[in-house]
Image 1 (tube, rainbow, N blue to C red):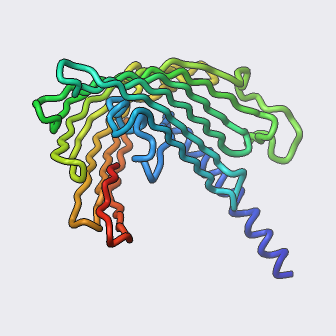
Image 2 (tube, helix red, strand yellow):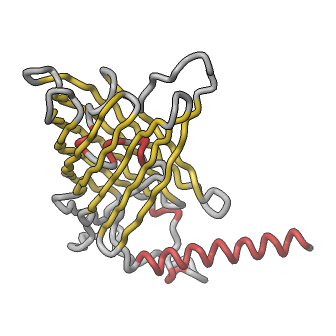
Length: 273
């Protein structure tokens, strides 16, 4: 009896959640996927980040699965790879070329969005010591979305088997997306640095609609970031991070930090982030 009651309440909760999502979505416009650990994917915080790192190439990957206990899990993956080329008279300017791929699949409809992007960036050294850089970048992305209507039930179908009258003739779409960004970085040494950046994603306001609705677009998104690395002593370093995002009427602010402790007392850490 207790299990039946629990299952009944769970079914009510799931139905209420689906109804709430449908009602709210009537007034929502398309928004981006985003991450709690936003700093893992450099292109999704600023296109100017391509090529600005220590090394010849860099690979990143991040995966998220959520809401599995109440519905079909929402699964998201993103991966990037970029290369650094040293340029300029004093071999201090940095030219970056990067590639990005994301995959997002959500809910019963298996609503999926896949993106492939190419990123170009140039970071100009402002002094003879390689301590200050100002950079700019552009990210061009091709995106495609699909949806499966077979697992969806509309409100007019409750209590009968009539087919829906919703305009669901399209089950796929594609679009081109352009984003730009600029950064300033101060790197006094290998263990301390500070950077700020501003980026505008979806600058071309790409159309995304399965029904031909003219205002179903990705609104431009402003992203402001701050990051740093501070070495307290030979064993302890801190890496503060900040991001502010505003897309249409929605905005979000995330800030925090992680730390690194060198457990080897006999050696000083020489690794940067």
